[in-house]
Image (tube, rainbow, N blue to C red; front, side, top):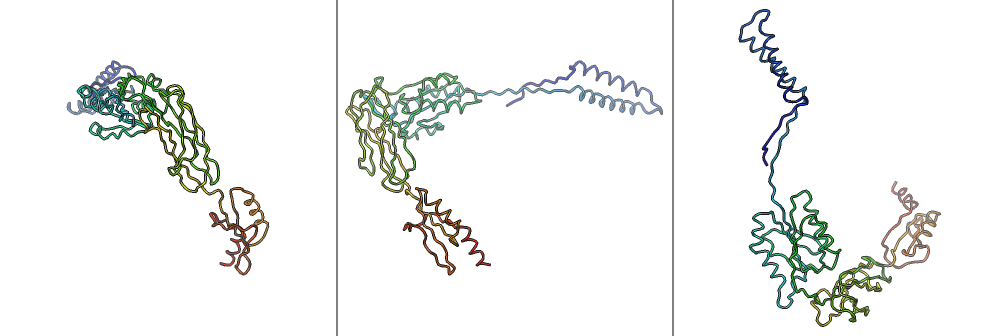
Length: 378
């Protein structure tokens, strides 16, 4: 950063300031040409100089000076390199290793020459975007199961707001299984997007379990709705077997027919919540012959299954209207099992209503119970 230029201006113009300053000097020296009583020549000049400076400062303030500084700062253009870190980049098609080819490009002289003239920044992406330092490019895991190219472009654009963003280099096999069409997003970038593609130009045959939608929480003995989204390429008209597994056992199966290349089919399932706790399920599509990879044929998901009812213990100090109202309000709730106790004068309790043998999850102490024990403490 450096200040290469500055400009001083006044409300009435620089010329007016010069004229008024000259007049102030002339007036000051004319005033002290002769003094009563007479003083030495040196003192007259000294006093005239002080008055001149005071009047010049007064004009300087009254004319509202503005000092404008021009800052010159050079910022190199930023080139964003988006690296597809999805599992599909580890595939070899017809002897062509996608990952090795991408790494060869990153270490090529072309990229090094680009770095000498630009600020090149590297980002890996799957379903999220992460910036990577140049020296850490070899640490990319290539394990992303979701690939959202459109979102990667959008998030890179957001990171570059207010910066000298010049262009994007997109290194990918072009296979995305989540998000919108990246071509649309590329057109909204505002900078050139240069794409380097990897893999065979012939669309590979593949089946992808792209999404599983279900409830994160369910109640015991209830139904769990599960919607499975499946995309297929190159298997139009083929029958696909879709399984739901729990504890590595198949519990549900459906047969569907694959559609056109890239078409998406949503398969609904309904599972039984028959075990309490955090349950792991998996969706699996049986692999077909000629499929590019079966690694994306399976997707796991978790559902936390809670007890169907909450066990509530209501404790009151007397069998009054408050106790009756609370008990009747709680007992009609289908999500609660209610035990009610009333304390007798001797400190023992009597059971009211239907007895539940479950251990309580929640205690409710009626005001009458609290007041009785407060009096006893006193």
